[in-house]
Every structure is written in structure tokens, then in C-alpha cells.
Image 1: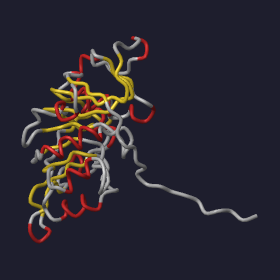
Image 2: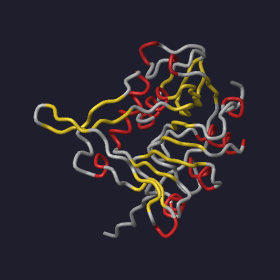
Image 3: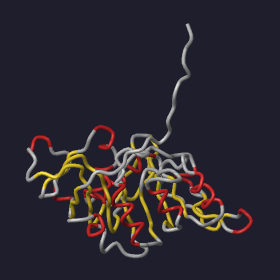
Image 4: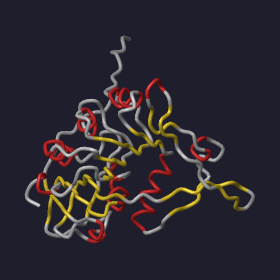
Length: 245
């Protein structure tokens, strides 16, 4: 694709979208901004987190474009907490490893799987507040999940995630859609890409063809590629005071 705007064309109101990245590492900033400019709303987003208040998915959240989040961590975004507690946002919290496997399973055609993560907690038993109503009442709670014992140990059934679209960021890509990720950006980006029915990748470097031995994700999972380098920000800058001998 020639531009990020072209790449996100067709993402409709109320679409479900898997978005790669971990914190602010490896997030598809160009695609997120293009989606923001288009004004698309009612989005149901699956991503490890929702960015921060002024960057990443936090930009869509601040404009009320996100209706539902499926995430494992939301602690860096004050606006997220405000909207969730005010009943303006639906939230499904998922253990991080389970979220990763649900995305991978969706890409592999596995409809569901059993995991010990969450057994004996509201993750399995239900009752987690997905959406609040007036007066802090729970308007929508998570349902109980099926459990089964294998080898004397209890497991909970988790369903795979498949989304309408996926937005991911890669260091390099080729015209066939094959992708290479850099360091920590390799965590959720390949999994998100696998889960999308239509996957859009922004790449920092676009080449004619990649060496097969360096490919992290096959182009069979990628439908659109756009080249561009976005601003990289630090999620939480921590410094240590000067030590005086």
C-alpha cells in the first residue's frame, strides 16, 4: 500500500481488531493514527494493553473510538480506568499467556484449548465485571467457563480469538508480506497478525524479498504492507539520581 490511510481502508465501524505491541514497544503507531484520522469508532480491540494516555491506542480511547478491550494489562492509562469505571468501556481481562495463546490458536484454526491458568479464580468461575452501570453496579459480568480434569489436575477451556482485522508493526517486510520483528516487538505482533482475517503491517524497511532463514512470520498471514517509520516513545521513563561519593 502507498499510505497508512490506504492500508486501513475498509476497517468499518464496530470492527474487531487485534493490535500488536507490548506497552509502547512495537506498536503500529502509523496505522493507529490513520485509523484515528478516519474517525472509525465502536471498535472492539484485542491487545496486550491500551497504550498510554497520549500515545498508541490511548489516542483512540481518548476520542471514544474503542467500545471494548480484551487485554491482560491496563495499568498505564488513567483515561482507560476512568472510562471503564464509568461504564463507558467494556473490558475483558485475560491472563497474559492465555491471551497470547488465544491469538495464536485463532491463527492456527484451533477453536479452543484447555489451560490451568485461572482455575480457582473468577477467570474460570465468572463474575468479573466486564462493564459497569449506574451506581457502580455491574451491568455485564464474565460467564463461567467449562472446566475439566486431566491427569488429576483441573483445566479451564479458553476460546480462540479471531478478529476482523489486525494491525502490526515490523522492522522489515517484503512485497510478499513476510515480516521480521526486532527484539521485544516480536512478542504479540506475530500472534496478532495470525489472528486477523485481514492483517495490515507497517514496516520500517520494505525490501523486495527477505532471506527465508530470517523470516519470523510468513506472508501467508499478511494482506497489506505499508512502509514508514513512526515516532518511538518511552512508556515510563525511570532515572536514578546522581550518586555522590
